[in-house]
Image 1 (cartoon, helix red, strand yellow):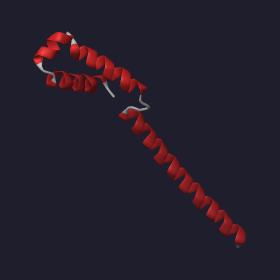
Image 2: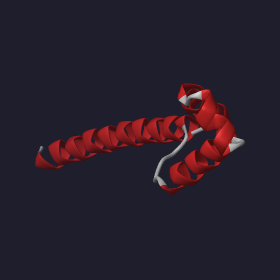
Image 3: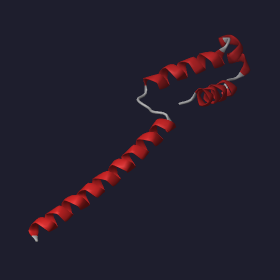
Length: 81
């Protein structure tokens, strides 16, 4: 998850907390952002860019497998003839 999204989530959480609680807690938004980053860092996630790269790689591999299957089928037909 990118830093901008984490900041937005932290800001939304911070904005939803009553003013009196915010004053008591000090810099709550920064603390929330830090906790979010730590917890999200523990998750096994990839960026959208990494996902797109893997998706393209998978598509190319699928095309190659299809091509090889067709070649094997043609070779079997030639052998049977």
